[in-house]
Amino acid sequence: MELQHPSLDVSLPSPDCPECGLAIDARFQCPGGHEFIFDDAALVLMTDAKRQDLARRLVHQFADGQATGRHNVPASRFPDLPKAGSAFQPRVWGPRCRDLAYFGRQLATESPRVVLEVGPWNGWLTHHLCHWGHRVVAVDYFVDDMDGLNSVRHYDVSWFPIQMDLDRLDLLPPNFFDTVIFNRCLAFQSRPLASLQMALALLRPGGTVYCTGLTFYRDATTAQNRLATRARQFAARFGTDLVLNQTRGVLDWRDRSAMAENGMTFVDDASRRSRLRGVAARNLGIGMTREIGVLRA
Image (cartoon, rainbow, N blue to C red; front, side, top):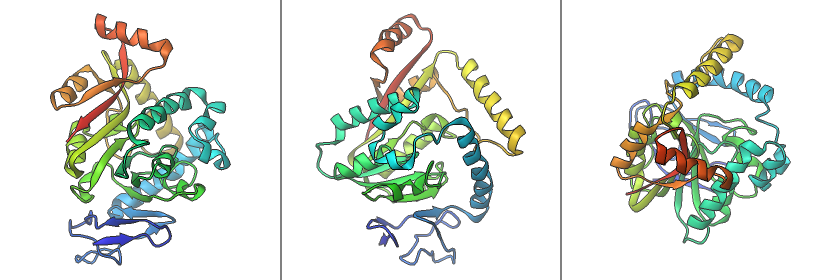
């Protein structure tokens, strides 16, 4: 059954209810009696308890985003992202410009595909995927219109935004997507390898999983300590945890080896200046590498 979005010209085969696992019908209800609402444009596909917990955290995370400059790009410039972002935060948007160039080579001229984008942020990649003719479902925790799923309102194309627990990708229709993109977020999955296996189950035969922004550390201690400090500061300021699910937030070379053993290949994701440093790091067994992961069904 196809679920038609109530305000956007998009649809989606029925996902499963996160409470009881039964398929959701066209009224956004399941046979178990659970009903699902929209937060503006975003379908809320979460248990009531998790949704309420997340809602409390998101108020604080939005305030934190304003304080840290994460919302520096005005909504009027969203249709020009990622390039427009470089004028505000070059270190944030430069890598995303490289991501767009990569996907331009991979997807811009392909026949229309069904794409699942995990972690779309403010739609900076999503709107390009739609302009290239692809049908996109975007899933994330965040729903506000500057830093989350409701940013779809700022673009001249539409996709199906779903707020859900990103550890429950198995609720989405299997064998439906041609492409799954983890948009610079795989390290923040509770179990990255399990998330990749769930993504593979969502793909049609011949489909591909892309994972951007993979940074693999030889020794992740410093990066983990930095994240722990950030989490403590957030908790001290707002009285709640920074993350909804427990996660390491970093990847190391053991993770890279495990992903490679499961069939993932890797593409350099580095500026020209840092590419030689990355080669040296791999050859000498030190430092870190920045890559895009590609996993085919």
